[in-house]
Image (cartoon, rainbow, N blue to C red; front, side, top):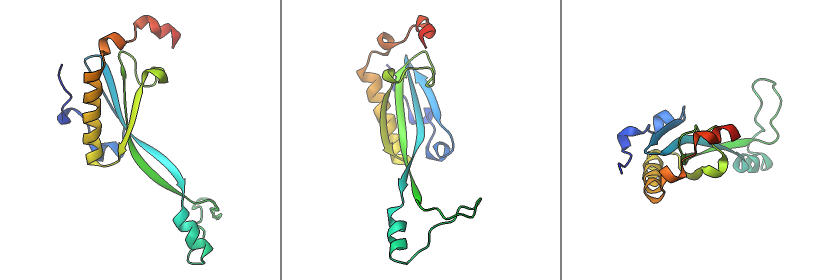
Length: 134
């Protein structure tokens, strides 16, 4: 079994803008930025203390009463071939999150190689007959 090398995946600069997917010996994989929108509690505390104002929507000019702060993680998925991420049922996918930085990409690469070694992807492969059910 051939491990997936760092030269075969895209790195953080690419993943900031795009999703990357690949396959190897019966296993498909995907790296993608995952965006969480959390309440901006720091800003809300400053507003309550009178140290800041509510932000304003640039399009409408209205105050944003529930400001949010975006937080990013790196999502990594593996699933059996032959179908795309979108056409594969969720229960067939394995998912893990990592820090959204270059070290997280390398941890994700190690994780997909562990997944590759610990599963019989040929056995898990979905049949083309399964296409009718999707």
